[in-house]
Image 1 (tube, rainbow, N blue to C red):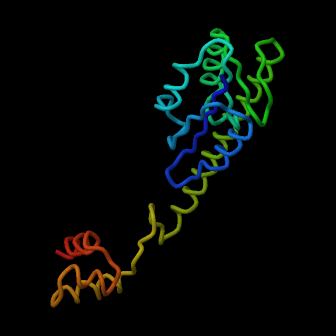
Image 2 (image 1 turned 60 degrees about the vertical axis):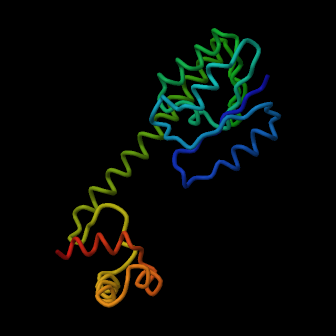
Image 3 (image 1 turned 45 degrees about the horizontal axis):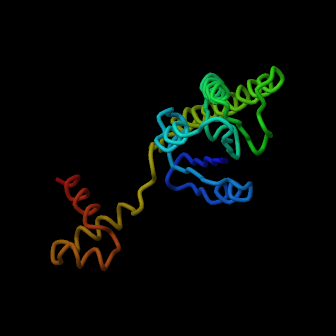
Length: 183
């Protein structure tokens, strides 16, 4: 049987293109999840690994969908090879259990890990540069300006939370937090 596995790291990301690619590849069953690749305990992936048996094929669109580190990828593929499971990485081809196949896999996994490490390094460098600016604030920017919040808090003096929320669009929970900060 041919099993597909699709994964994105966050709930905001879209699985659709991976799912479509796996369907076009003719996968009989597709497992998918929105779960960070930095953790090895991905529930759907673990479930899929547990049911794969001899002559099955595991299909992924890219190598980094099921392994973030070289060691993790090598161990996973080695275990699958020992069970007689074929591994097909669509942007790379069928990974064969031969010396050449294992070499190519090791090199590709090393590049995937290197690429991820470089992204992390560049992100850290960007943060370090941003932190040097006087107006630096880590985290998501505020949705509402201080002026908007102050106006909404003034409205609260003569209106209910529901009325202020309907007038300003600022949620009750945001107003409560702002009110606590004031006190």
